[in-house]
Length: 101
Image (cartoon, rainbow, N blue to C red):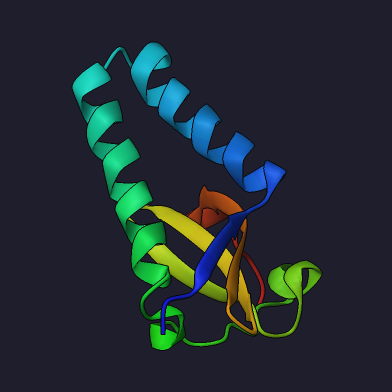
């Protein structure tokens, strides 16, 4: 089964800001391009097997629902939930921003 991907406005903004930071603030356009492709590929992989990542129970993630999952790309966390045949990407944040147990 192939799942549809839905990226929230917050996640898209996170993605854009992250890539812009690398590109402009760090002055690393090649690295930005690699990270752009890497995150894009990681999200695309979720369309084929979103259940590969376990449900997370961190208290800081409850705002996204009880069945939130986390995919990683480098030090970034892609937070998502699955409903029927849709993978909802809620946020793309630094993994160090996630707290709680």
